[in-house]
Image 1: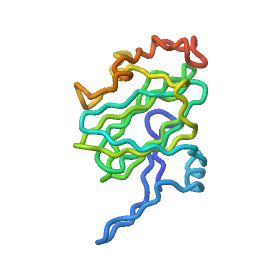
Image 2: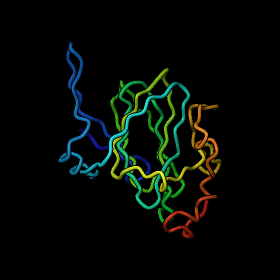
Image 3: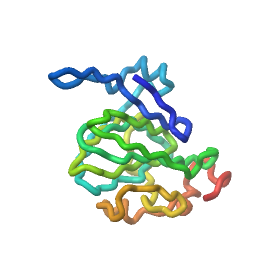
Length: 187
């Protein structure tokens, strides 16, 4: 298992060791000791699974008081997975990282607490699984507009399928006052 840094410290691409033969393949998606040695969390509290069709964009979601770290993978299909740093005291505040995750490349992306997360579906359908370091709390959730011009995320879809709450989300600058440590950086 390899733990590869991305352009934003803490966001980590995980490449599992894949054992293939004529029957298929086997891999570990999580191993507590290997994750600890790779500098990632050893404990997750919740597992989620979503199914989406081509062009669906989910995000950008985060939690305020109990921020979640997420270990994301495309079980089947292909997605463009995005992590946006929303920690106002961070030198990479407002920056994003995007990676293609698929059932073919078997990569995972670790998105640390303090980041907004989202993905869009590139294949006909996609099953996405992710482990979370905190439990989901609807009252604690914030959403950032997927197309916020200040973030300039290079989404590979122009007119995504969105939920009503994702479509009506505010820009990051509009919720900056809610973020812990705000006032140190500005978009």
